[in-house]
Length: 200
Image 1 (cartoon, one colour):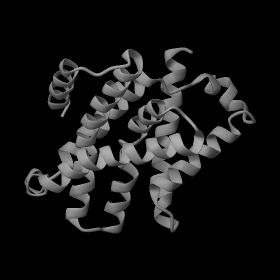
Image 2 (image 1 turned 60 degrees about the horizontal axis):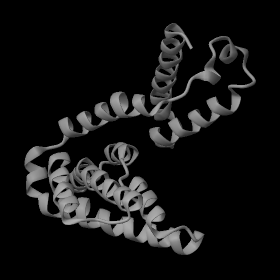
Image 3 (image 1 turned 45 degrees about the horizontal axis):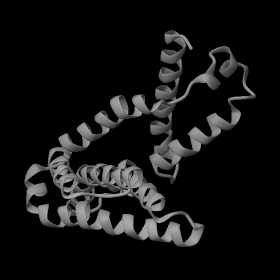
């Protein structure tokens, strides 16, 4: 797929999201929900409309590199920039409880639940749980801003989402090491603790 086609598709999707943002004021539906509906509609009709075939729309895919190195840094930067640092420090204890302890509880519940209900090996279920438990509340924060919820609740959710990635990354690496090597030594524990502090 050529660069002009990629740029044209990306520009078209941005224009579509801008139109959705202005149209959203006239509908009793949140902007993020409207974006999901539009995305599903574009995907559903992309095979039927000739304009999509003309610009190779069906060959356009989001790669993990694009998400990790383009979209995610922009989202995290915007969240960190708009977050009130004083409010973050004031609410640091509950944020850390949710980002570390809450994340570990979530991984345990999802992992044991998957292992019990689907019959997966426990280590694989926990590995999957560590991947999906660190959610990014972009849509939730957007809804908070639209609905005008309390500032403390926004700070708690946004602060937790900024910090739970460190727990998820380190936990994923520990579980991956356990799965591949079959053991976890004290040296691995010190390495995991250092990695947690560095990522955090």
